[in-house]
Length: 113
Image (tube, rainbow, N blue to C red; front, side):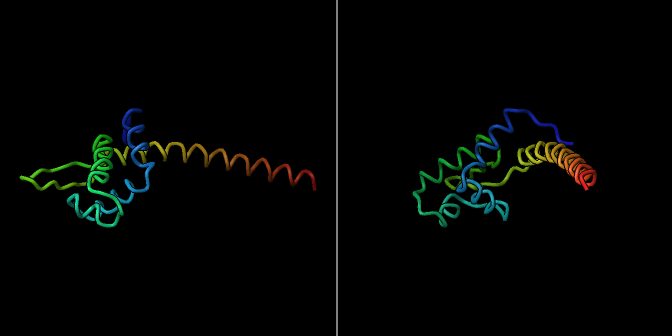
């Protein structure tokens, strides 16, 4: 199981709350890209896209590699793995709760008949 800390989760979920940032991550999942390539599908300025990239960088969801004037971005999977681990923990909990509720309702319904 991947260990996580609350600050990392808070930053990751905050960054993922925006659809533009999720779309940027989806694009970067296909491979590295430059700012201009990431901005192309959106009707926004390069500075606006740069702000989204800074949020993703602060959350450590992406990394930036600078080669002269060219900035390339890559996905960093570690914070996403931590978020997935956290979600799976609660998914197991709620699955067990729903199974218990189903068993109770089945038993109650059978008694009423």
